[in-house]
Amino acid sequence: MEIGVLDGENARKMVEVAIKNAPVKDVEYYGFDFFDGSSFNQVRQKLGKVGCKFKLFKGDTVDTLPRAAKGLPKMDLIFIDGGKSYAEAKSDWEWSKTLMHDGTAIFIHNCYFPGVKRVVDEIPRDEFEVEILRPTDDSDTAMVKKRRH
Ligand SMILES: C[S@@+](CC[C@H](N)C(=O)[O-])C[C@H]1O[C@@H](n2cnc3c(N)ncnc32)[C@H](O)[C@@H]1O
Image (cartoon, rainbow, N blue to C red; front, side, top):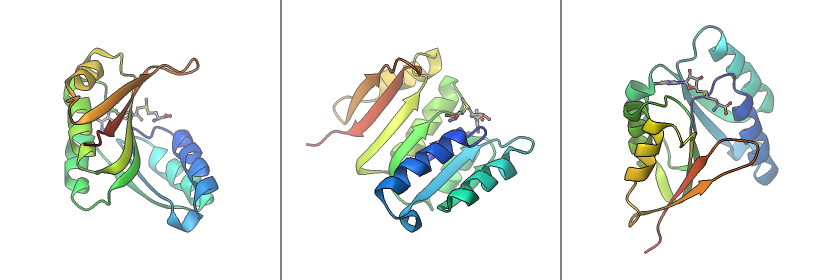
């Protein structure tokens, strides 16, 4: 699942990695974005070519994610890369958290943005392991997993 899809390039790359490890019929992608202009159709075309199952949710994730989350399966991987304000990132994290199974990894991109950083700082460390990844070719990203008790 990806929050903040933009032009779907990252979506395509994520799915292409996934289908190296699983049959394409077993790979599902869920994307959330405002999808302004032609981006909705552009992303649909890109993912259609890859051949996985996918569903796109158009609108503000503060509204769309709470509504959609109740009907979604648990996710293996969630990439949070939408709105960078505290309110948006907090809502995206809180609703993504409801879609975790014991092995889910959530990546929170751009975690140096003040609002996003505050959300990451508030994640309870007794429940979750939080590691800050600092790739040389991308910005800081928090990797969050459920702590095993
Ligand atoms: C940084 S881009 C995503 C980039 C993409 N994940 C990638 O790796 O190429 C952020 C996206 O989040 C979307 N976005 C920002 N705030 C949002 C919100 N509150 N609800 C829905 N989409 C939002 C924007 O429309 C934009 O496409």
